[in-house]
Image 1 (tube, helix red, strand yellow):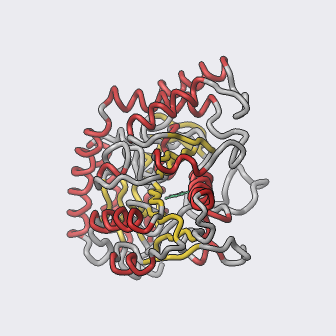
Image 2: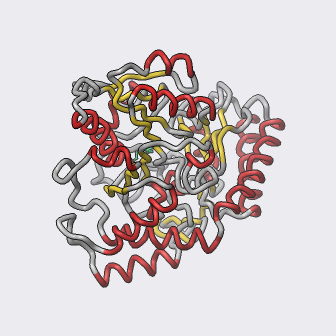
Image 3: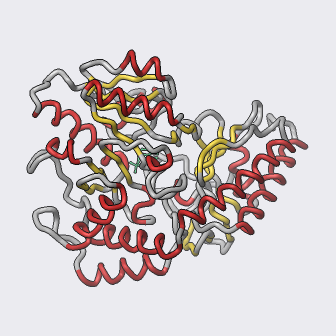
Length: 404
Ligand SMILES: Cc1ncc(COP(=O)(O)O)c(C=O)c1O
């Protein structure tokens, strides 16, 4: 199907390079296109559908909530947001939750909270948001300013000021760059977009220590790597380093739009009534879906299962890298967030298309890296099927000229 014109969306703005396939339904780890073709989904809506597609518990919670109360705004309380906040802060040990609609918005909230907290403390020059080389924090102007990749920023200036970058996993550079103007250091414990790079535990520990010593907040962007994607419910729990602020989105409501900022007690004064808001943020339907998601995870003990699946997947991918060393490098990542760098001149876009033709959905990330983020409910049999298709795709590419 590669090369066919896109079906179904001629009126959509061309801001995405969509693949030429139109999906009409999903079930578990599979999605189905408008031609009735089945695809095994190893990208899960970019690390979103942790419980797979059309999960009955999510469907039930959403339809029940839609019949009960859809929207009242944040002028009032409603139960789903209050309950979800309680569940999240109980599970991470931080103190309060703020809800919004996306990962970028969660990071916007975190940036505003960090700056306003310093301002309230009388430190009006403490405005810098320090981020990492290779970071991705979203496409809104503030989150984009904290994003390293210049290609995403080109032509959108002037961007907000007060953002600086430090090399990922470089403790000495962090020591140098953590000046007294830094309001917050924001870091993804596992960088997704730049090619799936795992932070060193020592780097995150140093970040914690330096933020404490120098009066900055430590923000973990767990938008992609949180919510069990890399093992424990929160990515910080895999490193034993507790941040002051966690941002979440993607998998939180298993596909309904929601973002969250979780804040430690010492930072909750950053945002007070009137400082920040969102009409839809934390509205009843996505909150009900997120509560159902957390309930199902507990019932299915997903955290433990994801560790087993991760070991199995990494084992097969290491074998594939050893079988095709001229095309694939060893896999990187943690849990079920995996990057497989491809060697020049083989291009990740070609494998993504090959795999789609074989009924397998995979993603790509920076650095010519294949990105895998299957639903956390994926089975070993599905991992086997995926590995067989990847081996066939790669050997198909090897028999052709790499520049085809
Ligand atoms: C680490 C990280 N932060 C933030 C975002 C932005 O999230 P959203 O697309 O929901 O705005 C993403 C999206 O891929 C992400 O991976």
